[in-house]
Amino acid sequence: MVYRNWNKELTEENLRDRIAQAKQTWKTAEAIKPRAESVHYNQSEDLIVIKLKNGAIFCFPPRLAQGLESASPEQLADLWLPPSGSSVHWESLDVDFGIPELIAGIFGTKSWMAN
Image (cartoon, rainbow, N blue to C red):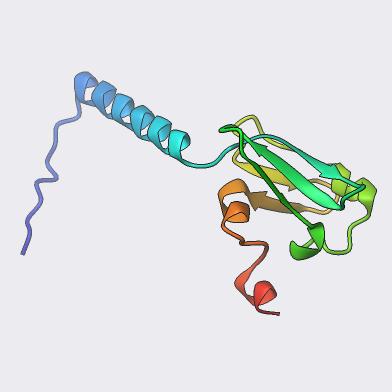
């Protein structure tokens, strides 16, 4: 059996150390997770094109993605990428996808992808 000592004193110094540790953990995660630099809909090729911050390009046809399969070209072009580059959002369709999930081939819920 493992006993943990949860009786840690919270001091300004401990708090500063914990915050610094959390920031470093976040920076490390951000450095290894794929993040988008830009994203757009290429209507002539019918592809969502994602340029990653590492220079790689990932694209997929919208028919593969839950919520995008029957969208108009105008709706597909109306997308938003947050400054973090962690996801892509289609406001008019109320559809969101995480960039790491798209790259992993996750284009919808488990039940939707099973069909």
